[in-house]
Length: 168
Image 1 (tube, rainbow, N blue to C red):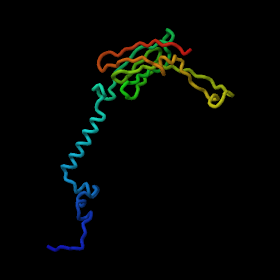
Image 2 (tube, rainbow, N blue to C red; image 1 turned 90 degrees about the vertical axis):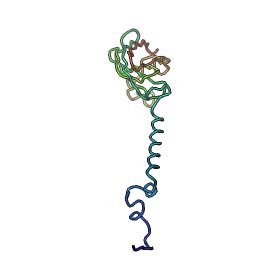
Image 3 (cartoon, helix red, strand yellow; image 1 turned 135 degrees about the horizontal axis):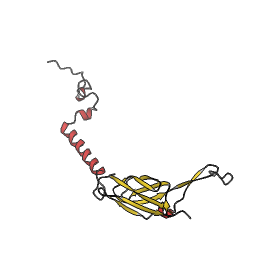
Image 4 (cartoon, rainbow, N blue to C red; image 1 turned 45 degrees about the vertical axis):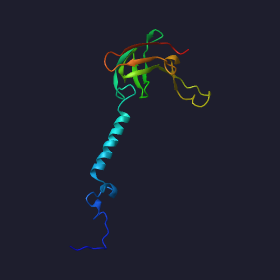
């Protein structure tokens, strides 16, 4: 056997020789250590995104439907927003002819009802008034200031009726 003292270990002769795309430090690490670290990452990630405070799965949705009246008449068009109390993103369901049908997050949700009408441009009133705008016609008590909290259940019927009034 011939030993060359002038040969220095490198990617061709060191641990990286069999794993050319893996950094030398990772290639020299025992496989059990790599697997243990990977498993630990998976467990931490699962715990971080797996469940809500109430034990239900994060982002679970269920069917919702119902009716919306504005000043005693079916609301022609608008939106019902179900905003979860647990911090998940809200779900918006479209209202058509006083009816809505869609999905919302399971759990306690603040409900907000909105309906918009076009406001014509008003040149001369200042910046932005020269463009068409939309105005929410529903009283703020039923949208931005809503205190209406409803529970959306994972199983069963989630049918609601919302009676709202116009903005004064």
